[in-house]
Image (cartoon, rainbow, N blue to C red; front, side, top):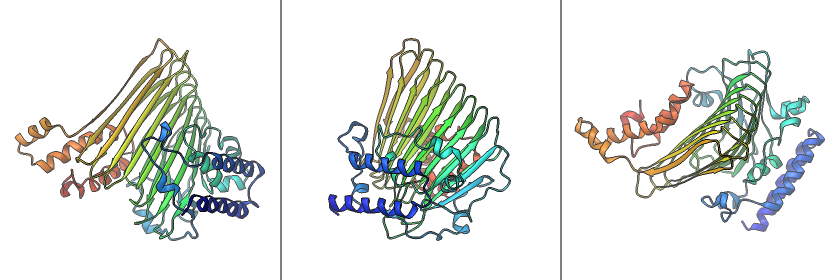
Length: 446
């Protein structure tokens, strides 16, 4: 499809969406969406000539005429059961092709002081969080996809935790793309507001039916107020024919702690941007990430941690594994602004190549404008250690088992900090299934 035809297609999509939802849209949201549409029309899709996109060409996305799904209701309870996490008993919101499925969601026994709603539901009921927080953190400084999300958003989740609330059960957000011969897209929005002293765990989980030709463009905004402890899991295991772009924006107040676990196992073309702003003293963030690519998959992860004030801490550990003809990218930027004394920042990216045709590009960046800080960063890209393989062979362990053990040990460095054992177990199992070149069948079936 030509560029002009694509422009016409997307303009028509936006007009159709605005017309369909205009009766239910409050004026503030209609205005935001119109403004976002105008900004995206000016900027367009990211250009690989731009520094932030030099490793990732989004032409496969830009050249396809995606449309909002024409039908939902194909996802059933039995299929959903295949994508739960073991013994967890979470509160759950389920979305199919970007739209909330109330019949599959589960919010029974919701704890006092916490509100979990679908975004459309919250807007219709006049909840204050969407109007106050939507686009409060998100911006298009690095990616116009966040603007595209605002222009086309149709649904999502709103999570509000009142002061002092401590949730014993996690919140599980399932975003499911159904199998389809159509090029379907969706633009989910997740808003999380954790008031002072609260504690909660939120899981964003992206899965597809086999052969789904979907494009998921998601934006998550997380506001952690003073003393809040928030644990955020993002597990992406789309079909190998799907595309995914995700932007996460986090702002942390005094003495808050945010822990992020970002796992990418699926998708044809995937880009994740994680932006963290530490804006008051005592704020602390922990970023753990793992990606696996193979069979011409492409996963690009960018993290940006901004230390804006004194006495803040960030610790970042990302690991990548590439096999077949897969390509992975990690770019991490830590910015310590002028006056942000007593900052402690650590960042490390370790990457493992399992085939001669695999490729991983790692680019850590550390930018410091204060003189009393403790900061370190680094990146490695290599193959399995031949000395370690020789040592295991000398103990009677076969080469396939040895390779599998070393790959697992490599991944466990970032999986071990996951406090939710059922989530970690599922990720480990998925990892085994997707590593035929390194893990023997006996481990993959465990």
